[in-house]
Amino acid sequence: MQEKRNIRIIEWEDLDKRKFYSFGVFMTMTIRASLYPATLIRTRLQVQRGKSLYNGTFDAFFKILRAEGVRGLYRGFMVNTFTLISGQAYITTYELVRKYVSNYSSSNTLKSLVAGGSASLVAQSITVPIDVVAQQLMMQGQGQHLTRFKVKPRMVVAAKQHVTFGQTRDIIVQIFAADGFRGFYRGYMASLLTYIPNSAVWWPFYHFYAEQLSKLAPSECPHLILQGVAGPLAAATASTLTNPMDVVRARVQVEGRTSIIETFKQLLVEEGIWGMTKGLSARIISSTPTAVVMVMGYETLKKLSLRPELVDSRHW
Image 1 (cartoon, rainbow, N blue to C red):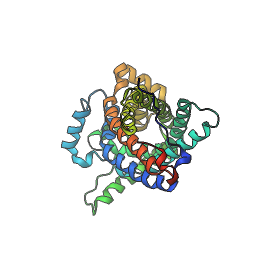
Image 2 (image 1 turned 180 degrees about the vertical axis):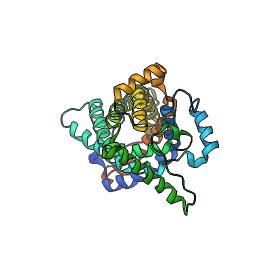
Image 3 (image 1 turned 90 degrees about the horizontal axis):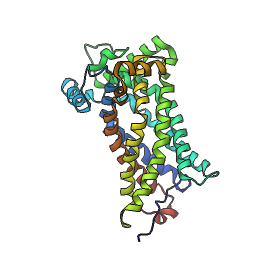
Image 4 (image 1 turned 135 degrees about the horizontal axis):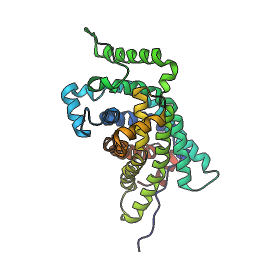
């Protein structure tokens, strides 16, 4: 009978923090650049009425590519890169809260649940204003009739950089003029109700799937492979459970709504229960490779960031 083995988790106190943050910024930026088009497509699918623009994820991809080119798939990307700050805040909060909870409980599920929810709370407080602006930019082009704010056309442009930040400035000015500072936190509660449960659920499922896979896999199978499979399984589970709130969040932020409950009711009336699944396939498509890259990258990052004296004590 095969002996049960556990995947040993690298904790916060095991890390060289300088290496951890240096490698972490590069890893996060690479992931965001690779998967940003799926985020843009998901946003457009969730905001559109019925199938007024696109019939699904792949239809949206090819229509945007034909009508707007590759740049159309990266609308708002430069603004979105500022979420690197929230990404670092997320992983720091997650690791520190895990360490704190470990003083009171040895349960990995409890540590992951509390740390994941806490990390998302901190990260969303930084991310929401960036998302509000980025999502308005995502909707320009084919989706601009679905949003309240539109960039001003420019006849002559000296450089592409001026286009990017000129459009961003247009959107920021319009949001502030219409809603004041509160406009940048529109949908904040909807974001918390989406991402705190998503994060709180993702980490326990991730560790659960990793442990179950470790029992089934041959003893020589690298831990990193098991973790790479557990990540997308956890992502698909969390995305499915929290997608209804994600649809509501997108509409609140893009359409300028104020009531989460009324938005939820209207969505049910107009599109029925299937309206709650809008953008789910795009979300899973984006979250699955994100989870693979993030998990393998994050676990590799932690391995590379181990304090020298601990390097030989952890196994892949």
